[in-house]
Image 1 (tube, helix red, strand yellow):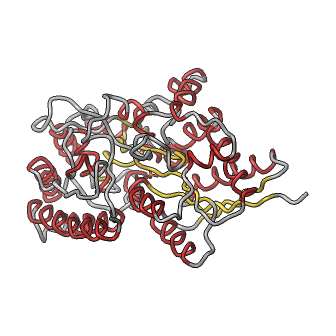
Image 2 (cartoon, helix red, strand yellow):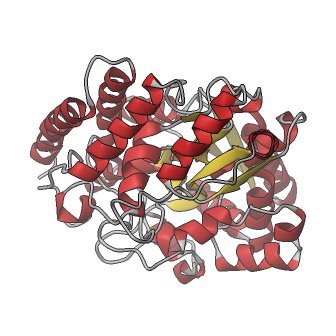
Image 3 (cartoon, rainbow, N blue to C red):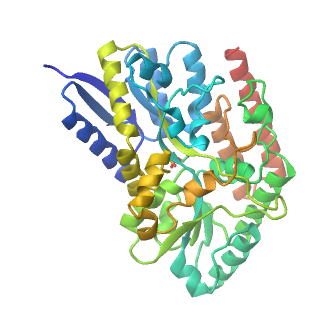
Length: 416
Ligand SMILES: O=P(O)(O)OC[C@H](O)CO
């Protein structure tokens, strides 16, 4: 018999893309009725834009991977009938899907006001501090745990010949969104947007402004070197120019393949001791799988079956261990422990520890702002103006909040 076909558009390039292809191939080999076609459509923004355009043209895939910042936009599309919510999909397929198997920090990002799961958690991450242990040892510095220590370590690394001691990627996510959650400060009103569309940004507060100004000052001293949006500055870390790098836990798999000349590891985000006495918890990044409406029932049965396959503890544990994405179910975490993964690969439980450090507060359970994909671009522009010396942190954050709020109002008007 012919298999029902499911189109799955994703944004996983390189080593991550190979893993996704392997999952699809394994699934297809084991299924007599379903065929999943996994297609790489570019980075997160490109994949999401492609899926929205395809939907308008009536050519949408069944499944699309959307990064966490696209959640509010996808939810609004759901209100207009474009989304097949995962809880509904599973119910219709007669699958008893246990939401409580997932980490609270992950599930709470993707549930509606009635606690129903809208998209399938697949690749969740959190930003960590990656460090070049060899370079730190050579410079005689300990792994930093506070921002003062990061600054001091960067200074010593510089003196010891490290050209661009400190850097990061996904700067809104790592330096504003997670910095805020980590210090239990809201990014915007209405519980970071979770409680309503009438939300306004507040990240031009003294803590965030002070933090951004600190990094700008580190740049002037030659301790920080900006290397671009997303993962663009990864090469700086891999080639040893940068020894302290904040970005997703999901760089682990690639680093293991690519870093041969030094020892590297990861640790939790630094604490700003002027802002908080102890860290709160980190918030996730990465992406989930959204199901789009407009296809036939047998195909949706395959989507549900494929989702069940992806949610298996062994699939999840394998994905986590190979990539550095978080073990998103308790079972996958337990299995990884049993398999001795955290002993053979020390530091790889940093992300899950950071996410589950404390019960999430309204300021630390995530962000849900409309148009946030575009707003992150505004934040990128304003931060880049700081790094290049055109603006100080106060001017840039005020401008980002004002420009961001205009896009929030536009989203609210279009969706209420
Ligand atoms: O590199 P990822 O997949 O962990 O994603 C990083 C950011 O969360 C994307 O918004």
